[in-house]
Amino acid sequence: MSDVAFEGKRAVVTGGNRGMGFGIAKALAALGAEVCLVGRDPHELEAAREAIEGEGGSCRSLSVDLATIEGARSAGEDLLSMASRWDILVNCAGNPPGPLLLETDLDYWDETFAIHCRAPFLLAQALVPAMIAGSGGEILNISSTASLQSCRGHGAYSSAKAGMNMLTRTMALEWGSRGIKANVICPTAVMTEMGKEVWGNQPVRAEWLLSKIPVGRFAEVDDVVRLVLFLVGPDNTFINGAVIPCDGGLLVGLVDGPPEER
Image 1 (spheres, rainbow, N blue to C red):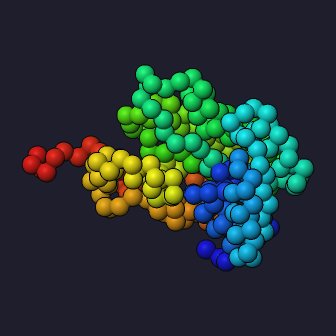
Image 2 (spheres, rainbow, N blue to C red):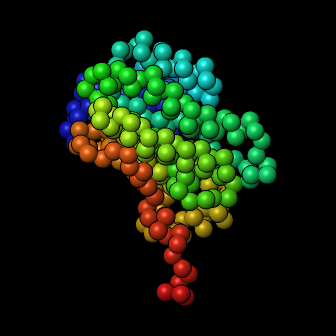
Image 3 (cartoon, rainbow, N blue to C red):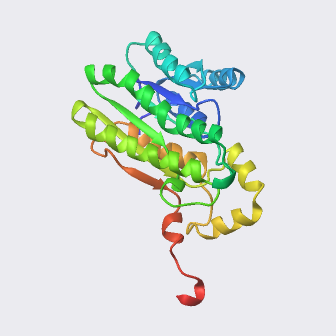
């Protein structure tokens, strides 16, 4: 990929203040895109923006609460006040998996669906008309392997991510003929700071999960970043409406029998 593959492009990355979102935003900026980070924590956003600009990238930031209707709608309005058109929308904002279903309260359930389904929908409603009026655009949603395989303690999270998958496929169907490609990536556990904390607190479960990944390791941020860059970049001319695992083979490893049965 060219060092200026995204020159002249504008990209929105939600959750861009940390983890996967920051890695994606940093990579897009390094390849020439003008990036806007959207997130909740203004201090983290400022630090992320300064880090990207310190490496020569063009970056802005926008602090909003995407878990609220008002926050998601104001984000769309504010983005369009910054620029009349954005070429790329990457929805990476998220919250961690919660408790078992019988222990899940409605506030957490609603917040999870708001972040993973409603916010991407409202942002797309705001930004897609200008994409269509121009030369098209790219939408990339970050889901999870938990959207494709039930997982204990992930009831709200898995359901919301599965909703994100279908939302993405509908975007691809309705807007594909208008120059918009929409795809979704489903990573397994990614070793961000939050990922390390979550799985570090569950060593037995982490060891079991790792044993089911044929390549023998969890995902790193760069594994996701490289896939994102391809899907929203100039080399992807035809992939649209795809739900792509980025899991080292986890989903095939889960259905494998014990060694003595092989």
